[in-house]
Image (tube, rainbow, N blue to C red; front, top):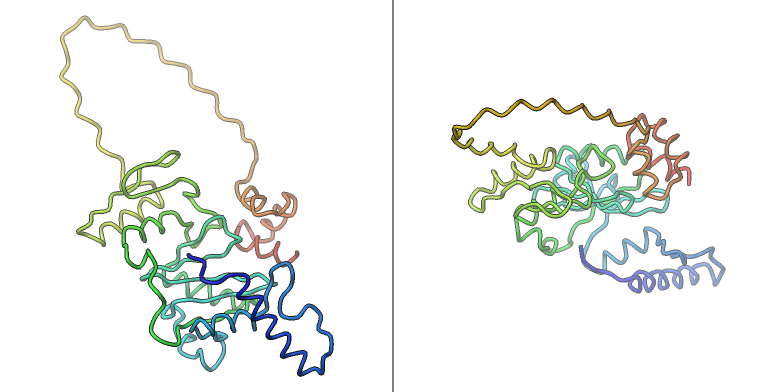
Length: 281
């Protein structure tokens, strides 16, 4: 990601829209207009800013987005809104990234995941917009140009089924382990398919399998040593009863009691629980 727009870009457009609307209303007063002091901008402002930058923004159920309705995975970018919270979902290569700031890290989607989540978002009442360049294509980013970095980005994301990342803060890389993380999978430069497969294995297990043990050294003739008594087994760890899903929601700013209730209502699904909590806010 990069700073494509500033707060000033949005506030300038909002002020222009406010002036035009006041003129139509004969100078009448307007609640808070098209922008609020807390940083929220309505859809008119978001559309106008993107339009001026050369992007068309169309509601997914509109006539202009009919092709998108046939297969959402053929698009490259979406913006979504529910209860005054904006976020985007972006495709780079054949990989999708959910950039919702309510998540601990971005999520990685494949085409099938993307189709499900857009369909589910519409059903849940989100406003969904497809974003398309009016000319050419989206500008290239570093991940478009470097397949290795794209795989590293995938490794750092949570999967489509979880509300937090398996490797959040673990610093997984293809060149080797870093502090606090398991050894990452290798990425042969001459075989992109093998590299991608290794990266996916690393996301769910930390690598393509354990390394074989080194060969045992040849025994040295010596007096047999007495067999030591077996060490007592360590006591079983106490069950603290802590739920990591509750910790995840608390880290997002919700109180523990509300998080527990939302998780019970969502049958343990962290994403659905977060939506319930946002809807109750």
